[in-house]
Length: 424
Image (cartoon, rainbow, N blue to C red; front, top):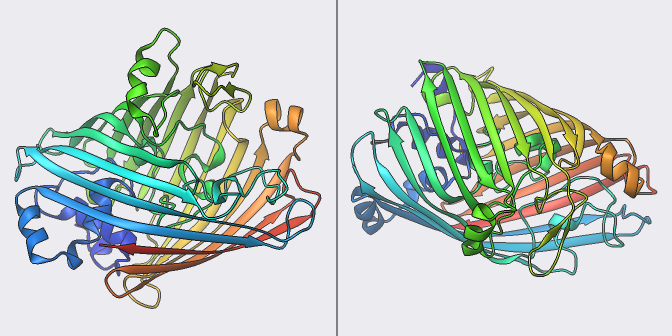
């Protein structure tokens, strides 16, 4: 591991990356993001009891957590006070069934969740143009919905080439391998989609869909990651994916990422990459498609684009980043998006981190501007401070400011939030 990275005071998020990439048999590049099952479990190594350590020594690891998020704004679409709150329970694990203790380990990976809203409007929907919303063309907290039970991961992960590459087959969350950087996780980093995967300028399928993805180092510094996923799949009914992924009217989400990193173990901190993506017509995620109760998709055009990302530690604790994308079609929320920000790791104590970022976006002209009369441009900013209390609790106050929300009569909107996590 480089001298620079070893000097970083690790936050919970950093530990998820560093521990996974440098401990035991996982010396090779991990081509998944900070919220993947293995990276989430890695951050909890310090808190494991003896019996869990014994299971981990045999290749079986697991974790569980519960999140609650509350949002409040005095700037609803009609100037009223609006609020939203929800919770998420998660159980996740990994079982090394082939090659345990070697660089070419094969693992069964799973994550099940229950997402539920405490209020009539869930935080995922809080941004949009209804009576209890703030009129922002975007997603303020996309992970906090009222979806109910869902399977986010149920896949086989195989390391190859002495750990320099990996292949994942099965139901998976594409945001674990697409356009990832260290602050992409809505559970521990920014909550606004503008500062996460795709920066709002990328269409995305459901989190848990049938997919195959692969990544491999190309020498010491360059790497490539690609994947193809079911664009009609539903994480709340994963076995329906056999019909949607292999049926005559199947639609797919395809990505190819080419990147540079300072070293394998810094792949999501000191990183520069380009991500090319395409989503077929007829997906469940086109802005113009209609999804019937039986799952039939009517209408919906295709979409495509390219995203870019740069991040690098400039001091042992401060990591600035620049991210964005350009898209066309009616799949992505934004035709243009640019986010600039920084993360401050170890602020106050080693397990705390702070993030601040500003996003400029141009809303989708084909659909949002043409049919929903959305404003052309928005600016959003987010500031959060993730604090860990003891071994099992995290509290994250969050403030977001939106200038010229596209669907609102208000000139701006303030959104105040608090996120809590209990984990074992």
